[in-house]
Image 1 (tube, rainbow, N blue to C red):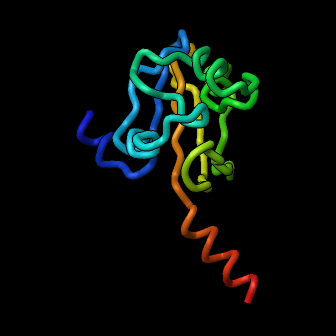
Image 2 (cartoon, rainbow, N blue to C red; image 1 turned 90 degrees about the vertical axis):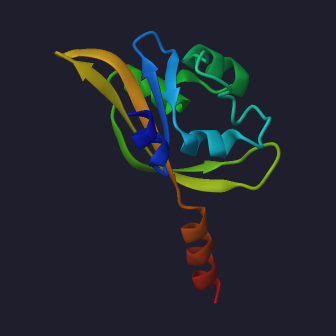
Length: 127
């Protein structure tokens, strides 16, 4: 299962029902590897959603993983990632609760990097 998740280009983060990050793939690791800023605070599998809230200063409703844990689903939500260090990126984010016999047992959020597509689109509109 790990090899499958790590082969996926999208960033994937999975939490359990307590909000503990139990898995994130190589796509997420690559996104956070050179960024030591609050906008990319996941630094290990012991990180919790509560820690994300404290490190980012975001409100719970701004963290899709938290909202998915509350039962919400998001599909192709465009977001901008503006780190303190490094270049801005754009992504399409999806989030959903994981279900275990009708009960929420955790949540998953994925993000696909669309930065290059957005730049190409902006360049074609400016010409």
